[in-house]
Image (cartoon, one colour):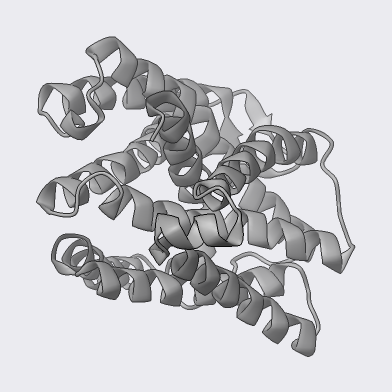
Length: 286
């Protein structure tokens, strides 16, 4: 099992870095569309959709992503012609992201709701997956299109990986008090403390090394951002764990040998990437 995990990682990591640093905007968007399609397929499995509903859900996610991309290409004159404010789509995305991850998901997890309605799980899938795809493109090309944009995107993604790793090792070493035993029995409050410590240190180092230069944050702001995003990282992980528990499956799929599925690898990123970019838009007024 360990050998399989390592071999898969040795293939995936270079591919991700190659795409992140070398792909053009068009190629990057096509790659993200592929990830979105696979994630939508896995989401349909978690929601236990029928074959027709499953296919329609995947097509719906891809069509909405394509529609958003087409709208983003239109000129201000086109928006004026149809009588819609140019930033309307982006504003709706921001409101949807913050409402879903800061209100709906915390309530969902706190009450451990076992939702069976397909229409609700369909809507939840759209609200979880589409902003994730949007944020991957926005972080990579929204602030800078060159190497700086790639480095910033990698720096934000690394926050999640640091939180996950720090929580794992702290939990293994000191874990005694369960965080959410009915959702993910292995997670502990000691692991949460480790995640906060790890991301705080990481944010300070990332700021010192200039990885966050495009954001123009002070050291205090960088650390504060890390502290605010760490709970989201944990929540994204718990949310996907709860969906799998409700579906009665261990992994979202077996697409990535030794690692489970796409959703298993990006669960925390689903929350952190879109929320962080949505907050950036609000704070910076972009």
